[in-house]
Length: 458
Image (cartoon, rainbow, N blue to C red; front, side, top):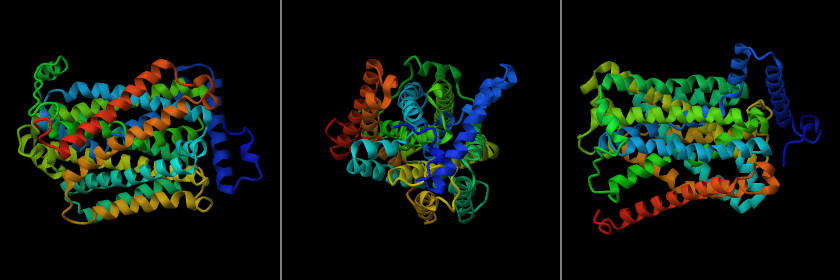
C-alpha cells in the first residue's frame, strides 16, 4: 500500500493531489541533499532540523489549554504527590503509542483514517472518523476557552481574541504549505516552555518535590477509588494520549514525506517532544500545588480562578506569564488539531489530502476542518459557559475514546502484509495491550463511581 514512486506523474490524479506529491518530492530531495553533504556539525544540525517536527508538535500540542488547566487542578487537589511521578509513566505510555504511528506512516505512506477505511471497511472507518471529529471539536472548544481567559488577563475582550485566533488558525492551514506550516507551528510550540520559569517564581520546597518521586508525601483524600481521584486520573490520561494524536502524527509523517530510513530520527523527535510534555506538565502541577492547594473546589477551578490565585500569591507578572502560556497552549493545539481533522476527513473521503495542495485545488479537503474549528470558536463566544466542568469533561471523553483507537492501531501494526519487517514484536504488543486494558479499567471504574457513588465508599 505504499505510494508509487511516480505517483506525481500519474495522469489519473487531480491537481491538488499531484501538487502535494510534487512538493513532498522536493522536500525529500532537500533531505537527500543534506544527507549527501559532508558530515560537518552545521550540516548535521541542518539535517536534524529538517527531520524534526511531527513528534515535537504532537506532544507539545498535547500540552493544550485544557491540559494546562487539568494539570493546575491536579496540583491544587493532590499537591506535590502521586501525580508528579505519574507524569513519567504517562510520558512512557505516550511514547509507546505514538512511536507506532511513526512506523505505520513511514512504512505505508498512508494516513491513519485511510488505512482504517481501506483495511476494515466503511463501517469502522466511519466509526473512527466520527469519534475523531466529535472529540476534536470538543477539544477545540477548550482551546478557545484558554485563549478567551488568557486574553482577558491582558484586558483584551474575547470577542477580539477568539475571532483573531480563528483567523490565524484557518490562514495557517489553508495558505501555508506543509514545510512553512510546520516551521510556524514549531515556533509557537516552543513557547510552551513559558511555564518552566513560573516554577522558580512559585518557590516550591524542592525536597518535597523529590519526596513525591519516592512515594513520600502522597495524600489521597477519599482513596484511589474516590470520584475526584478517578476524574483527575482520567483527565490526565486524556490530556497525555488522545485519539487526535494518532491521526495527526501519522498524517504528519506522510505529508512530510518521511520514509522507513527516517524512523530513528523520528523516534528522537518524538522523545524530545515527550520530554517537553512531561517537563511542562510537572511544572504546572507544581505551580498548582504551591499556589492553589487548599482552595475550595480545586477540582472544578476555572482558568480565571487559577489566574486570580496566581496574581494574589505571585503577583501580576506571574499571572500574565501563565495567561500567555494558556494562549500559546490553546493556539498550538488549535493549529495541530484542525490539521488532524483535515487530514482524517481527506483520507477517509479520498480527497486531495496534503497541506501542500493549494486551496483552489483542494477546497473540499480544507473546508470540513475549517467549519469544525469555526463551530468550536462560535461556542466559546457564548457567555456564562461552565468552563471548569467543560474542560475536565473533554479530557475524560478523550480517555473514553482512546481504547477503540488503540485497538485499530494495534491491528494495523500486527498486519504483516502491511508492515513487513516493521510489524510489532511480542514485547511491544504486550505493553500496548496492557496500556489498552488499563485505559478500559480506568473508564469502567470512573463510570461505576459516577453512577454508583456509594459502591466503593466514595
